[in-house]
Image (cartoon, rainbow over all chains, first blue to last red; front, side, top):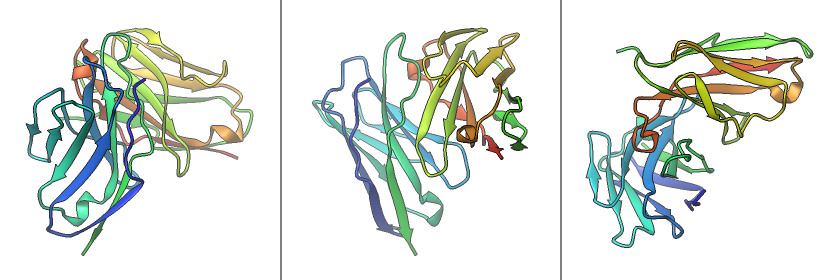
Length: 111
Length: 116
């Protein structure tokens, strides 16, 4: 499986934007970039995914570098509820349907 | 609509006993996954179902672990002769498409298993 690299932890102030980076230099052409988050005592929650173009949804935005070797999850206005572990995962192609979770980034929101 | 449902939410069992964990996926979802998460650790993949068949069982840690899925819906994860190292949260997820790599996974809140 292609690997991703994320910072272990980040802090952000409430009501400010948050940019969570992810490096994936060995990404293949068929790999989608998925982001999930896990709040305390809950199962992971889907956030967003994309292939080449930037993506927006009600939760976040995903900015994908032109060479696809890195991406950034953007939370436009962090709230206390956004405190979680954020996972960046590559997923692609038949026979590779499972998600392989790394250690993720623990995001702390400062009131 | 209803999400992925897992039961029981908590299970305490004695070492050596067998346990069954149940997962009800979102209606119509063809793909189903089992993961486990030990305290303070990351998520560990166990098994993946597409319909009733399991094309990827690579994460099952030993032959004490088995899983089945019937009618393309409910799945049961069985752990025989439980050991203390089996203590973890067991998470189930489902997704809607055969092209699973392009469909999000929806997770349940898990079954917390404690082996005493």
